[in-house]
Length: 144
Image 1 (cartoon, rainbow, N blue to C red):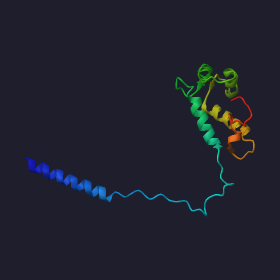
Image 2: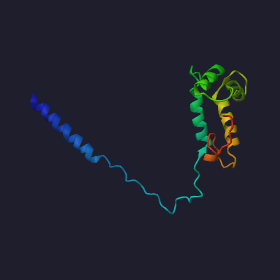
Image 3: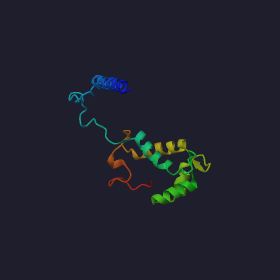
Image 4: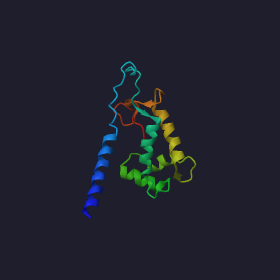
């Protein structure tokens, strides 16, 4: 009885060793070709519309406490109060709720954020640099 168990264990160990030896090693890290690297003036660092929308949408959807995919005025007010946000939440909500159904859905939020991004992107390069972002020390004090 012990002999068959030992044979199975030996075969299992051989299989494990064989698999470990045939597993490819991770590829070495590639160093960038300095001739293909963009010049310092060509690098666009900042916040794109896609990233801007993703960040704001994630924060906005935390207000959706009943997880129905839309935010009511009551949910928005509670969320803004918890964040200690400045300004009247009802006024902000009214600007975002373009179809005036009492809820803000993803479509309305995306349209609002696209307009806000365009207004903040002073040089119209499609990227918000540090000085164009709200809250930056050199940014104009605009209501969020």
